[in-house]
Image 1 (cartoon, rainbow, N blue to C red):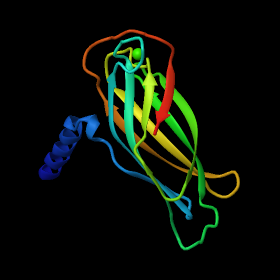
Image 2: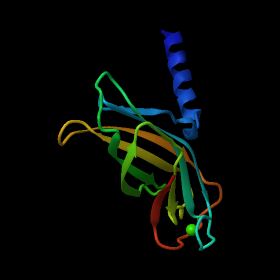
Image 3: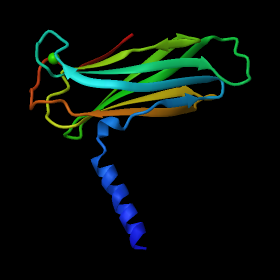
Image 4: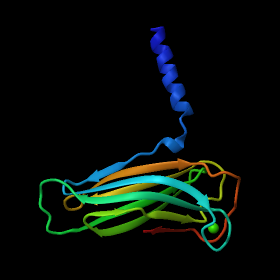
Length: 167
Ligand SMILES: [Ca+2]
């Protein structure tokens, strides 16, 4: 009994000291015909736009779109949605919805830029969710998350909030 308690406490202690930046992984979304795999590989802040303030966030991810399953697909074009979300230390969320249209088989390493969003000190989370069509009016979805703590303090607000994805 005592050993179980020690093991449980050790496990909890391990979870408590695991950095959030390690909590990342590959996410596979499949509708039985197409499979989309996403993984946020890195996220950081820097000065990306003309204001010169280090309050811009970049999140690099890998995107792999391929055919899956036994069904032959005549249409080689895949159409799906990406929700790019940024959670700030204050708890505010910024969500940007993108439509992706690509041909099979696609592998890309895009980068999401959140301009002028890093105005607070503390931990940020980038969450990328893929919505893949599944029959009419239904979607299958999956998310990948990357947490990071930009060094330094409060950089303050800069220009307007913008988001873009560059391939
Ligand atoms: Ca900026």
